[in-house]
Length: 137
Image (cartoon, rainbow, N blue to C red; front, side, top):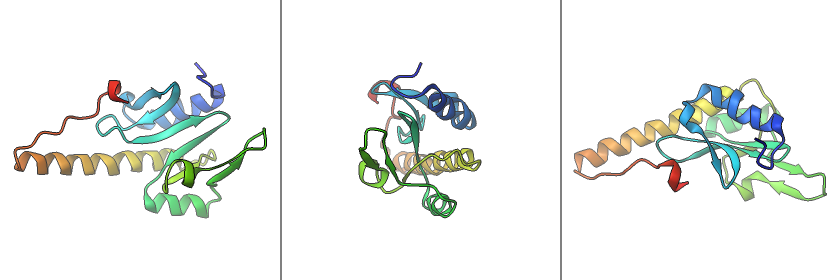
């Protein structure tokens, strides 16, 4: 299932990077193979044609840039994409770095910690916040 992305990219995102995360993180967003936090709905990674993008923690973003990760690409049709402009300040283009599995896990864990804190606060205030469901994405 390519869904507009190269099969190697889908395999990288879903199998390689997604293998470190709960199975419920693999999903399609508007037909695009992606990794989404299974409780918060935060997008962690997306397949992007012949490339893929990752959302990173602030610390991992700095490490990735230092290792040579890019936030810009030029497509074969001459068009360009800046992940910082198009996706947000914490996104890079994946570069098949061995640390990417750890970076995805760190992003997942950071959002899980924030989700748990929100749930505790909501509970203490007698509020209820439902987790994001796959149908809402």
